[in-house]
Length: 135
Image 1: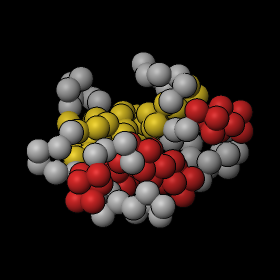
Image 2 (image 1 turned 120 degrees about the horizontal axis):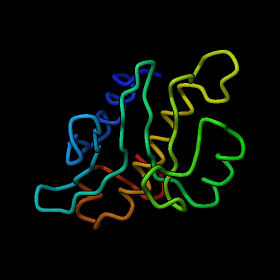
Image 3 (image 1 turned 60 degrees about the vertical axis):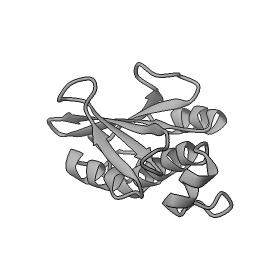
Image 4 (image 1 turned 45 degrees about the vertical axis):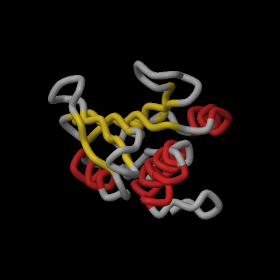
């Protein structure tokens, strides 16, 4: 999966925006529900010559299962290893890969949902987020 596709998918989510606090090579994708509300990060994205690498938030038990099932998924680089995974998207969709592009997009949405569900209720409402149904 290429960087642009992954970046565009992240930024298409309600309230998502991009920031570069660590320099021009690391896109930090954040969400804000209201202008006066808190800002939370749900993805860190690095371009690679042949794709992209992304850190995504994940439920701890699922994070361990995903790492065991997919060599493309490792504990979060420079993040809490319990709550974050690093997904190497450079070979996604190629022969021998265990992840599809759809899998990666689902992981992005899961990360977003985990972060948004922790925002205050008015911010969740501004994003159209419903706890029982995701988006």
